[in-house]
Length: 439
Image (tube, rainbow, N blue to C red; front, side, top):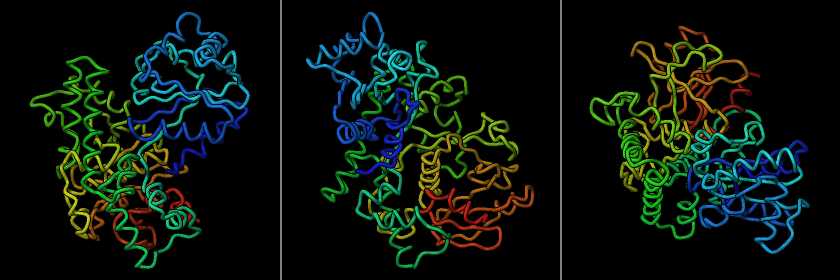
């Protein structure tokens, strides 16, 4: 499957100031497949070490962590000389070998000519817990589940994907194309973006098997909770993880600890939320007190929403049935728009919005996302159905006078003075649309 990150890997390879690269991302989003493909296609030589698969590889990093010593050990292990000439060395599941993670510092300092990529499903967790982390000595990239744009390419709709990303002026699609894109989106919301799920459906067109794979992935996450945390912490992580879909199904989606466990307090679960975020399994959207720059300076971290990293897994956890795919409005309206908001959050995160925010006004109005783009702030409201109500956006506009108010909905593209409706399938190009509307 084509991944947008592949182009960034090529830029990293050719960067004269390249550092060892840490590729983050949740389990089973395709990190190993992507780096293996990159290593075999972009380099003459490829060296692969998986610390989870082969525990004995950790002994290669015992003793001196000098880059020369480690390269010598790897050469002896593989029985061939490992040099830096057009060679990619891949340390996979590096969180299982803390010494390998620390060694990246010495590759940067002593042998920057080597091309090193490290990946791990729990790197975000490991980085926070390891004292020897090579701060400032590595580059970072994050791989997410396939976005809707990547999904279109995987299903052979390259022309549609290209049209979405290469528009030179925002405008409505012909209705037949608009309907086609919405139908693809409904299928994407059910399948999600986990590569194994999509490949299975592409190969076999078996929706039940796709759901079975989703459930297997969820079970693998549960095993990670037990493997990489204490028994007590694993219980809390499972409790909080299972509560996220329930929280999203509420009309008011603000996270409440009491939904996780009766009378629970923030102190009980604050570490758990950070663990799940570090593992790449949830996205946090904090409320802001006032839409001013920098947004982070006005965030109220005691009030927030949690979204899952993949809508397909959200559907599996809520036992969403596949017949909703063929019902034009059912999927969009079910669970108070939870799937649509979750989808939009994931698409924004994939566009490098590392922190997301929302705004409320004394329960009278709520805007789902507040975006910062080129030093301007834009309110973004998500509609799961065809409702034309703009009450919250108008309330926000009356208070703060933004350049533009944005609704994301199943409707086609609309522009009326400062109001813009962006089709759900175009969220991945929202930065481009904002820029074009401002010209």
